[in-house]
Image (cartoon, rainbow, N blue to C red; front, side, top):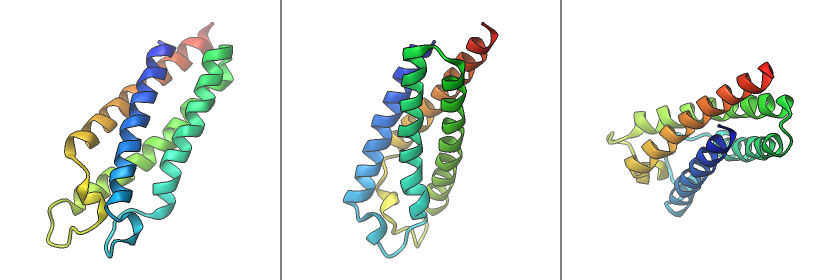
Length: 133
């Protein structure tokens, strides 16, 4: 299960990287209107990469502490992701929807979110299992 979580985490990271590139190419923070706070835009991928590094440490060592630390990081990433997602939804299609985030393809957002939730569940289940050993 830890390898499935690793694979899902990597897929989520690739999809998220694509969304970040789309946001940057379309002006990012330089657009006149954006609903995305800079701290969250920077913190979301940085927290995800840090958590992924800890998850890789867990896969390499099998230490439960690494699994739970990665889960905690992923929890922070999910909260930030939900904030970005709800702000993207609120601004979508409105009269004043001019932010760079409006260029996100809905399919890419859906894939990123679905794989992220899958990763969250797999990491949690793995952490629970490794704690029982």
